[in-house]
Image (cartoon, rainbow over all chains, first blue to last red; front, side):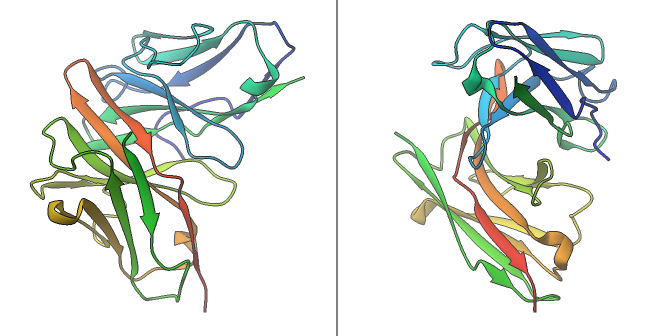
Length: 110
Length: 122
């Protein structure tokens, strides 16, 4: 069982806006930066969002992140078929003194 | 550009030691801005952080694996390595090496290797 909780699945149709939540605690999301990773089928994870809402170079601005208290969210607007992937939140956990990942959310584009 | 590549046996027997190496090319492993990490993913499951190693050799480990894991770094070869002892079938996974940026404004795994599948089976 993951320290941070994500819904196992999410879905949307092309062009829609979808959000994926990540619930943590004071020792991780509540006190440290949240990152989001996208894992396309059969590939390595890719950094999508860092420090709650920052996009690495090359990531479309359709992807955005936010944080409030001990929860974080990833939003994808203008959903496209190529966005179909697994999405993971992650943060440093002060209690565990290590990195923790959410359980992952499988996004399906209908 | 910087690339990471995992290497090592794809099959390990139960109770033996899993050993993997990650080679960093196109950049320095000795930069003070980075840690070097290992993350694994059992088939069909989520990501699990194993640990990080700094170029100086200092390490942090996942408490759930700490008694069995050891990370090391060889700056002269631009490599860092993972050893996991007393493996069982539960250690079957794709193992990824990754670069962790450690700056005030960014602390994240920003670069990943392609991953290597390690099966534990007799």
